[in-house]
Length: 204
Image 1 (tube, one colour):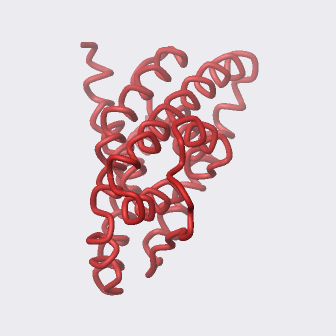
Image 2 (image 1 turned 135 degrees about the vertical axis):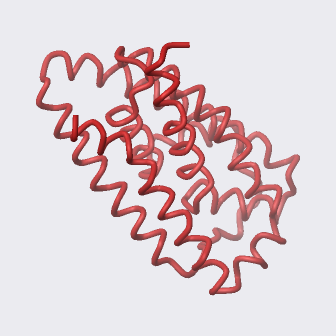
């Protein structure tokens, strides 16, 4: 395994862990689905999220690679915008004191519905854009996208599964405002810490 990959992989794993395990549209729906339908019936939804994020990562990664080759300045613009949005997201997570759970769904989301949802999920776009512009597991944008897609699947699948498996028990635990605030602040700090490769990149 190349040295660059070994040095960047921990940041990629940390980023995937924090962005997939923290509250967001996907996890809120998985929490509600786990409560209402159970883990087994929610499993296609979980798989669809993992597949959808991976497809989005590959599509954006290969598209960005060509765009950055033609317009190098676009890289800096995208990197800056992604970091700013990530910091904004960390602030939103850290200052949140409630979990929004969508209720009243008559059936679990299907696999293909969950895949399609990622294309309109702002958090998913933030994840793949930030990964594509700031996490360098490979110098080749296409191969970097493949590597990050694998990381998102390996790390993200069990992370989002916790929300569905936890179900009602997790919702009851997080209904305590102090516990939820502590959890969110911790996740926000970890999200900011995952930006250390960007800091090294600018310093270098």
